[in-house]
Image (cartoon, rainbow, N blue to C red; front, side):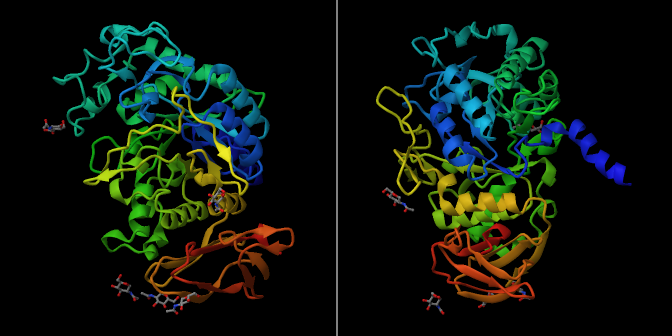
Amino acid sequence: MRTLLLLLPTLLGVCWAQYISNTKPGRTAIVHLFEWRWTDIALECERYLAPNGFGGVQISPPNENLVVVDPWRPWWERYQPISYKICSRSGNEIEFRDMVTRCNNVGVHIYVDAVVNHMCGSGAGFGDHSTCGSYFNVGKRDFPAVPYSAWDFNDKKCKTTSGDIENYSDPIHVRDCRLVGLVDLALGKDYVRSKVAEYMNYLIDIGVAGFRIDASKHMWPGDITAFLSKLKNLNTQWFSEGSRSFIYQEVIDLGGEPVTSSEYFGNGRVTEFKYGTKLGTIIRKLNGEKMANLKNWGESSGLMPSDRALVFVDNHDNQRGHGAGGASILTFWIPRLYKMAVGFMLAHPYGFTRIMSSYWWPRNIQNGKDISDWFGPPSNSDGSIRSVTINANATCDNGWVCEHRWHQIRNMVIFHNVVDGQPFTNWWDNNSSQVAFGRGNRGFIIFNNDDKNLSVTLQTGLLAGIYCDVISGQKEGNHCTGMQIQVKGDGTADFQISSRTEDSFVAIHVDTKL
Ligand SMILES: *[C@@H]1O[C@H](CO)[C@@H](O)[C@H](O)[C@H]1NC(C)=O
Ligand SMILES: *[C@@H]1O[C@H](CO)[C@@H](O)[C@H](O)[C@H]1NC(C)=O
Ligand SMILES: *[C@@H]1O[C@H](CO)[C@@H](O)[C@H](O)[C@H]1NC(C)=O
Ligand SMILES: *[C@@H]1O[C@H](CO)[C@@H](O)[C@H](O)[C@H]1NC(C)=O
Ligand SMILES: *[C@@H]1O[C@H](CO)[C@@H](O)[C@H](O)[C@H]1NC(C)=O
């Protein structure tokens, strides 16, 4: 029996490697440093992410892309590849290699946003150039820096009049036609699969730990399997022998479309877009929802299996109205509710968690749509991305929001590490939006999202002692900088949370016991 138990995880580890995050033991969340420069990410790994228990960074696409000047340098230009040279607004290959090495050396791994479904938009014309100056002619489907030529695109395979996806209810349109005009790679061809794998293997050799596969929904699952099967094992300078890339595929499946997330489970994890959409609806209390409805959060509330899910409250698309989820998505623009949502996600055992880290843009909502949704990262007049600067109080400046540095979110990343593997226990709710739960005997969290003050005594599952709340403050030396919670001999504690307070939740864990 004992041998069997010991063998099982090893076997699973070998067969199911693509679901394993490759984060260091005890590091259980990654952060998307959207549009950051490689030099800034290297510094952030060393000065902040490693000391605070972050497991990794999802980076913006590192490969050469189309330079879009109208509108001026939008973030989405990076989703229009020109070649697989490591050369983008975030930096060159030397800076990229330096970032990967320095982050890996402090135990923070790099996850690449791989844009391999398509190349640039079919409308890119003469006079347009690329971030590294590589020649291309999209009209002729000529990308000599890869090289790809007309044979390598799906133009003949797609049966729509426009060449674009016209009917999202037709899975063949969705996979074989152009997504918003982006020229669609023929991933059915072994040559194209080999070029994609060559690019990904180049990054694996540099030392990356895995990939977000952009626009996976627009590729046939079997084509993804084919290029993934060509990938090498991870670099043994930082990963154990035989380690495979962590894979998470961007599939937007909110239900009601023929292409479903489950078709992609064989290849790796899948982005669970229902997570942020539903959690936002509940925390905003739309449609009569209340936090008490989170009691059965997870597979039984309609989400995909936990071990296949990559979860997030918002991402770079839906925080600005792109992608999916619409008005219910919570973002840094609504900090009070956003912190509760991220706090809930990081306290709960479901899925593998990703934190969003954003930049400010001049949001301008007209008739429900943000007309500034294209705005790129903070930049100088020559288009170069501005450095992230750090204030004396550890927050970011120069246009960067850095949600991951908000102390409530940072401390909940640590909470998530501390309670890893513990069961979901001691649920309590008042049949409204005051809820609480524990994670075995290692952590406890309580929320008041009602209009009434909360005052209640609850079983925490923790040993008797005085614990520092990690939302109003934290433990520093032998005292709490915020609220203290006394857990009595029977494991219960009294909680009071005003409905008016900016941070209307309290979280304690074993590492904050005085
Ligand atoms: C879209 O595709 C679906 C599935 O093939 C089909 O049933 C439907 O009629 C199509 N709609 C249009 C407008 O062509
Ligand atoms: C941190 O410092 C900056 C710059 O001085 C200030 O604008 C900001 O409000 C401070 N934030 C917090 C949470 O103290
Ligand atoms: C809980 O609240 C719902 C309305 O949200 C109500 O219908 C139900 O009766 C309440 N249950 C209890 C036990 O109070
Ligand atoms: C929620 O619980 C609080 C006590 O913590 C109570 O005052 C309030 O009335 C409750 N709300 C509902 C709807 O039961
Ligand atoms: C709720 O708590 C706040 C802060 O403790 C207090 O100022 C307020 O009077 C309380 N409201 C009610 C209705 O008890």
